[in-house]
Image 1: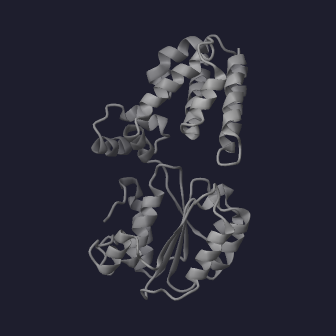
Image 2: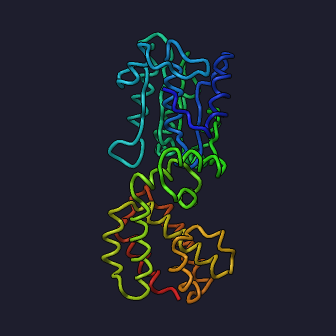
Image 3: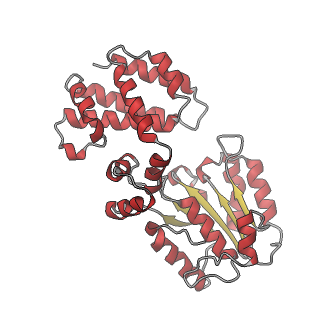
Length: 323
């Protein structure tokens, strides 16, 4: 059952050592960019806390009654709180969890709860969790996951033991990625994924390179009048808006690099340099930086109640006007 990724070994060993010494904290905050496997790590940690016969490294055995219940999704003392029909985790979800954790464990061992993404808790939900974080009860482990820990209230962060995950070294990430697929684009995929191996793997499994190729052609086509910004907005806001904004940001950053005569090795989108190079010579550097700021503002609005159709229309129309 052990699925701890190579770049998580240090964090796993540190936590298991604390557990062995009887110093396991009541709450952990797993932080790091998306695509590093924080959720999988939390799942494996929960499994190890329940397992009746763990391996030497703390990994769950996979065969005992507790492990079988975990695999079936029916362990009565394991709870997961996440996004349901909303973009936020609400007070009712946290209140229900706290009531459950206030009762005795049904299996007589640990009670473990995962909250993911913890930064999606609204203010009331975060406040509702404080008392349980302060007085979690014996043999209770709360695991909070966040890719934006700074957005969590300081009162939440201060009550959790922090476990930070960073992107692995390039060679380690490439080695792992090559073991998972036969792709010859591992370097490019990791560059596009910010070095996060699971994001890079998702590029392969979801055929994102092809989608990205279609998008950049249409994005650049806006400048020549080949594409209609309203039609494009309707199409791409129905895809994966976060990916689209990330791709646009990387293209504009590369245009800035090309405009500034930066070495080609530093380009994120080397596979599309032939399309970006001619455009870089036609655009003003100051205006490119202005559009990059606008992309950043739009990215920060994702996850809110923003109208994505209007957001993309505004972006595309602004892009057409940039000279």
